[in-house]
Length: 366
Image 1: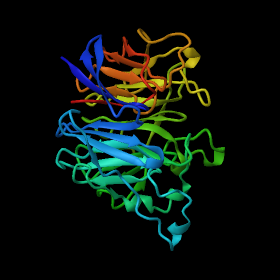
Image 2: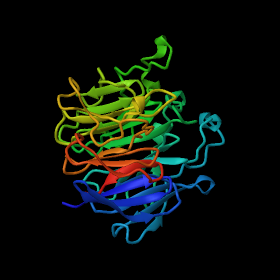
Image 3: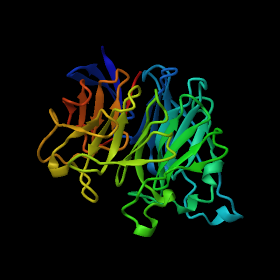
């Protein structure tokens, strides 16, 4: 069955279609413009693309006809910084530099979208992205000043998860600001990174929940209490809705990485892409592999068939490992323009292209 993949890159949005080992780029939108995030909303089929246009600001574009036409819509934006009060001296700029996450709301909330940004603000739209409101409860939380940037100047929110059982339950992950959850639609928030350890901090503050660096967080749709995190310092899994996290003994060749994908129906299965830490940030020994667990992290299998196995200096970013709706097809991309697809749950890979621009995010069309 033909499948469609959206590829957000530094030089535009590519549409890739195919099946098995037959894939091709069929369209190129916003040529030359940096696209940081993409969403194909499974509820109504609408496509969204977030662009990072430098001094022109962040732009958001929407297509209701699968890319045949695009319309500019309002992008998330902070309100003016207060001139008085405790926030007047906030060192974080109140300007959206990057839309890092685009997440559809619950199936019971048509038109609701969530956007995680850098700096780490959370925005909500209730009209299909035509207007946005900052979640002030999290932005004004007294612990926010303790957040800091990982590889960036400022903290960023890259993972936003909506509990399929309860549209009011939202979980977010921040680099570096830990994991936060709300059970009332965003009015109140709790820090829930217990069990995570930041090896990059002094020993007496390594377990501070507010300064953890989860690189990516995903959730099992069928059993939403099961969440996975690829952390700066290892792999974590929670089976109680993120209240507590257990560190998993990571497989060779490295516990460092950015990407994680999980099976929406099997809480035991997840995929990770290891990389060489910390300043290197490319495949360990120049050899690309993907690790999969089928038993909740107790054991892993390592796959490299079809992937470059020598002098491969690819890095797979947070949103560059995505499982298709069929639960067997995986797509993976890199910061050096590589794009691969696996039709058998990651065991064998087919190279679609080595020549695309640096890729920031992937999104399957349902």
